[in-house]
Amino acid sequence: MIPSAFEYHRPADVASAVKLLAELGDDARVLAGGHSLIPMMKLRMAELEHLVDLQAVAELKAISVEDGTVSLGAMVTQHDLIDSEELFRAAPILRETALQIADPQVRYMGTIGGNVANGDPGNDMPGLMQCLGATYVLEGPEGRREVAARDFYEAAYMTDRADDEILVQVRFAATTGGYAYEKQKRKIGDYATAAAAVLIEAEGGTVTRASIAMTNVSDTPVWSEAAADALTGTTCDDAALQAAVDAMLADIDPQEDNRGPIEFKRHLAGVILQRAIARAFQRA
Ligand code: FAD
Image (cartoon, rainbow, N blue to C red; front, side, top):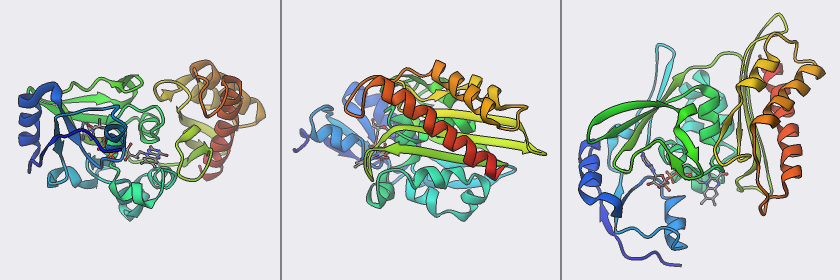
């Protein structure tokens, strides 16, 4: 299908993009990699009069790792996340997750900003960012503000971002210890039926710190503090694994759809989480 007619804008900096959004109001939308928005427009599920393309905004393409803090400009692509050795050293879970998104064609275009701002529960980066304890930096007519990824998602496609704000940067602390992103999908290139992001730090075989987040098992990503607490102080034995899974299951709310019925999704979420914990603990 062909999208309805729209006017194309290509600002060269964030300030001009913000100004355009403020002037054009509800009829305008930011365009990043276009790999979520353009399909929606082609299906006529989104009809927009103006697209404000961020491709020419060089300042949004920066990657930096400084003093233990990773900063990603919103227009950093999923391919960039895979390709950067600096990022791999700072937070290897980024590459493991990005490699499980779609296929290379999508990853060359799809951006971190588009993936986390979109609000689609099937996107993989929001759960990962919650697991990492990331902060999103938003810029609007009133200036910049920061929101924790764990507070950003309100419902499917509903986030804390105002229509006239642009997500400009994602920031989080570099990781130490073990990590795993485990994803179950129906076929190569598909969105998750369920996925789990896990970070574990351990000393002498005992978990000292953990973080766990789930993808596509509720209408928002789910950071399960209770599941992480169930692992902390344990040797990740079977009882601890089961306690973590039980805690996670109490936090999620999957719905029946073409990826399966609720009971299947709950079972799958448990299996996926156990695998992710086991791999992360082994690497810790
Ligand atoms: P766009 O499509 O350009 O934008 C998406 C939305 O976010 C729009 O509403 C746009 O206005 C808004 N937006 C974009 N950037 C900003 C910003 N900086 N500030 C504010 N708002 C912004 N994703 C996964 O996570 N996992 C998958 O398995 C997966 N499989 C896919 C398979 C296929 C075949 C396709 C086509 C896509 C798939 N995707 C998947 C989606 C892909 O990763 C998208 O690229 C991503 O979700 C959106 O990023 P984008 O840069 O393309 O954003």
